[in-house]
Length: 143
Image (cartoon, rainbow, N blue to C red; front, side, top):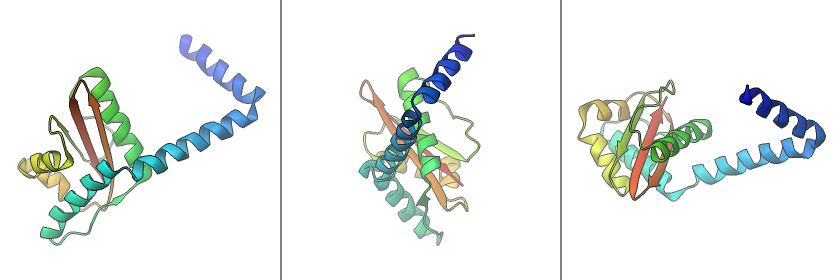
């Protein structure tokens, strides 16, 4: 029931302040723009593309929607402390522990199952990274 009340309040606030909906959409777009330009995530993509190039595969490109989904999952893992796959609907690789993109990507390279996903035929990807209490959580989804 509380969810219905919250949804009603949200809808009411949008109806009373139409600019609020525009601001929220603008905030989402700003978050996406910031995320897909984040140096850590770009480094993850660069390292995975180096590995893919060794096998003659096309490079991955950032898909902003997939990046947002991967980042939400990384944030969820960091917030809850649960280390598990998300069920986002895309092939996914996750890691917890390495302190830099090199460590995360190398961990995936040395794991046959994760390496196989990294080398899948997909060309679009989303990347996420979050830290809690000094523990990093890494996510890549590929389509």
